[in-house]
Length: 176
Image (cartoon, rainbow, N blue to C red; front, top):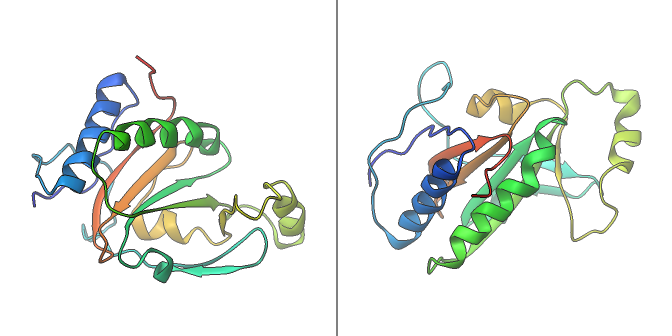
């Protein structure tokens, strides 16, 4: 498959189309030409999906949650979280037309600037419905590991075996 590393698109209708097409092609086993690169980790390599984080209910999750499934990880800081719903809806709409295999959606909140004494307060601001869990990254490990920009919703896609496949994201998605 063609290398689709670090496809960071501006949120326009064409980027939404690229994202949906990229995911559909991924699921159908097709390949796309490489897309323009965004900032990458210093050595240029992208590690496989690796994490051990707790959610707002103190339940720990690891990459084993995604074993055998395509993992779609939504990562955002406070500003970027305003756009996560738009991105997840756009990608879900794109996946409806694709015969997609099992997908695991993972939401990660980047919270490295929150001091320890405020972590309980911040946790209380997340949904209290246990089906709406979000992984809390108090140390910014996802930002560092995957070279992610702030103030936007970052979407990372990993293959069923954990290999990194694609990164897209941005702010608002053009509904057109």
